[in-house]
Image 1 (cartoon, rainbow, N blue to C red):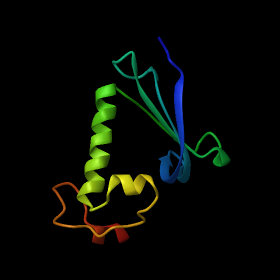
Image 2 (cartoon, one colour):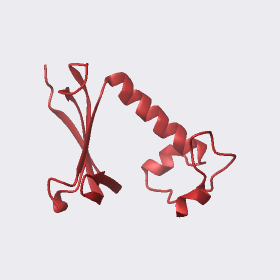
Image 3 (tube, rainbow, N blue to C red):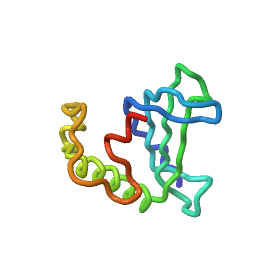
Image 4 (cartoon, rainbow, N blue to C red):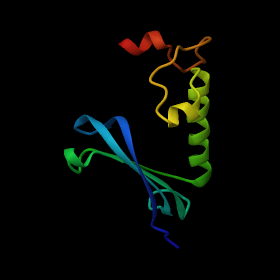
Amino acid sequence: MCTGLVQRAKVTGAGRSPSGWFNLEEVSVMYDCTYHTASPQGVNIDFFNEKEGPGARVAVELTPQSAMELVHAIMESLHSAGIDPGEAALGLVTAAPVVGTPAAGTRSAASCSG
């Protein structure tokens, strides 16, 4: 059964479409029917910028387990960088020093400038 339950949020970031990068302004997250995964229902995430038209959109469908893995990875990423996720959610964090050595497959703050 499709739920149509949608949560929307304002975001600041960038997404990439076939025509290039665009600014992200909103995200819709819903638990609903999926059409491209093995799971009949899942978490659908749609990043977009309505001002830039239908080409300014990045959408993903995840199984509920994969969605929770994504949440965990985001929280761990913030924590590893010394950012308190609660403070980030309240907009109290703009940047934090990276502590420690980057894990394999990641990049350091110094590599972000290029």
